[in-house]
Length: 68
Image (cartoon, rainbow, N blue to C red; front, side, top):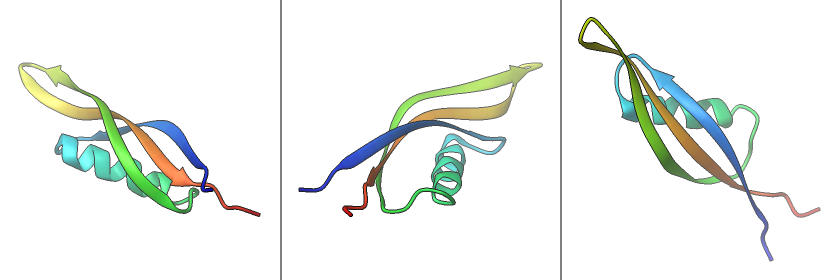
């Protein structure tokens, strides 16, 4: 039986929420193997002078744990 582990991360981008999600997955993949999915929990942004400056997303990254 496979074991799936889940970690929570915050991705950030000055372009879009989609880019923030991609950055979170890309960063996680540097140290986590076997990523199988991502769940977006929350989308927020920073605003200055009426303009969005940063997009942020809280995500759960799921990955299969090596069976050894």
